[in-house]
Length: 214
Image (tube, rainbow, N blue to C red; front, side, top):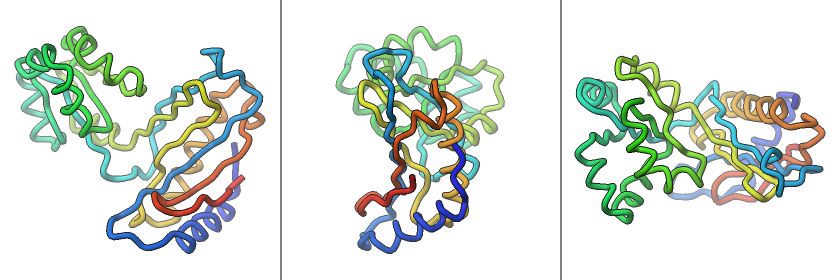
């Protein structure tokens, strides 16, 4: 779906003008209402990973890894690393696992650990569409972390809309607009009837009113 850059920029200016100031940095959220899709049918539901060209900042990444990959993940600046010993401990304490995983937005797992990760974290992350991305033990974790921090997940479940973050208050409108374009393009390409399945699009700051884009 193509929306003129000027229109997105105007909407973002209104988003900033109408939102009250807060004592924290708010996120810029995008909501897309879908139409003419029976969401009771699983193949009509949206479950996409979109890599934003300008990132959003603050995306916290957790890596499930062992040995050398765990060491390299820490050196590369992963926000958290869970090694096999801790993973086994979490397997016997569901509440502790939920608390531990709640801190993070994106998950990566060393491929050989995926069976255990799936058993322990799957019931928690699966319903949220946040299952870890598997990577080989010899993977270039620096590159993967940089890529994954730019990822947002679009998920509709049973209701005909998706919502995701497309920026932070401190980012320029130009960078946020680029992210909005990436999300709408990827979403339209994934829908059965493309842009015709998109009913309306709104932008807002965390604590501000919604501004209609489309």
